[in-house]
Image (tube, rainbow, N blue to C red):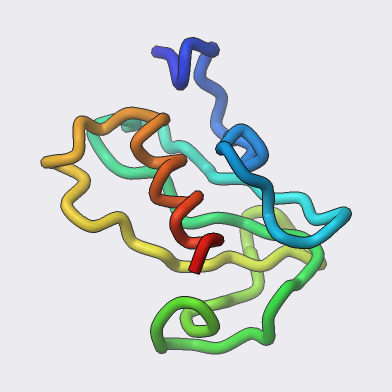
Length: 104
């Protein structure tokens, strides 16, 4: 399976999107499950911590937890993709979703 004409891995760097995270030195990844593209990738994992941790709430500053999958210093931003099943379910479509998040 391929994402944007590259072999799929379980992690996709967000810098593959048109714009990078708006902070110098930031690192960011999206975790793709074995069931991609049937199911949407998770929200972004970001390092260093850009915003305070907060359970619940709306984007941009809500639903930010410590990343259990990536470890110390990483944040997980829960950002559901609206209507994944009707979107075409490609890596490009998902990265456009992430791109829009950081434009807000």
